[in-house]
Amino acid sequence: MLPLTMTNAGEENIIKKIGGNPETKKFLENLGFVAGAVVIVINEISGNLIVNIKDSRVAVSREMAVKIMV
Image (tube, rainbow, N blue to C red; front, side, top):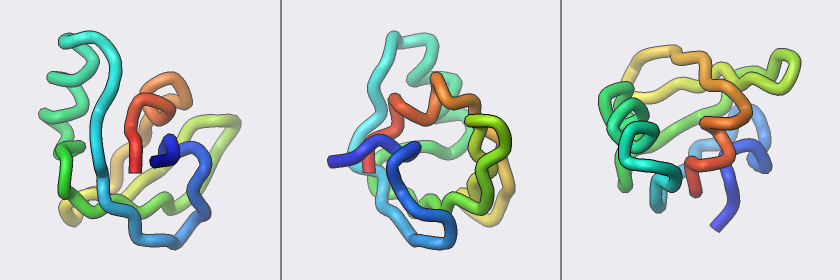
């Protein structure tokens, strides 16, 4: 398993697990980051990631992205 920050832009990744405290997990789940979901990193801008998840583009901070394991 790798954190989302270690993946290449344009690659399809399947989320294996979400780490962090319950608040963080809930926040990410509400955005669609759940185990089994497909996530694609579109771009990285000053450490923050723009990702495609469930047909939506979402910006995720580096701190959040390291808790998303693929």
